Length: 272
Image 1 (tube, rainbow, N blue to C red):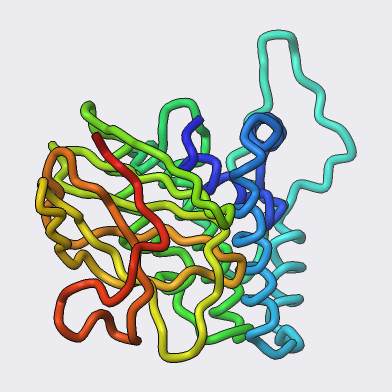
Image 2: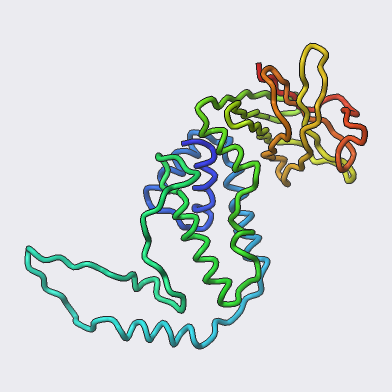
């Protein structure tokens, strides 16, 4: 299981939406990769933020009426006898009865998840649909796309990991910050994943650089801000060349005004 698959499972775990098999896979992956625990914290914080962002609303009477109407349609036989050659097939999941129509699950092409993980596009859609049903009932005004669309840097990281020429390199700074650079020449993308970066004062930001060649020319590659725990997944803008050093400096908000580093790097990962 790669880190992206684990991050998906962490969301399902935070929502208590994992199957027994996925929960076991989640626990085993976490035990084997304790440094991935920041994904768990992010997922728990996101679920809590969703809950805190909306006011409780009493469900309308129509919900109860619709539920009981669906229940009344169920067969009232106390038992069903079947011969050895017969089987009972459930055509509908009545446990999911409610005011919203639930379409039967169809076969779909899994996107953005490895074959080792059961957490693919269909589960994301089902999870999003569950939130959509809540939102339709008036429990919130946040769009599903806002809640579940992965950040561009995360998408880029997945594309790199899926590429046949994916590469990575890591470095640990004196202050304890751990950084891993991920890149793939065929995808043309590069991403820096960092844990434990110090918080910056107001008016300051972190800026990415490609440091290139014997002359150590620094080429700006975007700015980013870590989360409250000092973790960040940041995609570098521009083309990475073989042998580049990926560096991070502290710059004024908005990035270096003259396009050159104004301070020594606080983080550097050699890719050669």
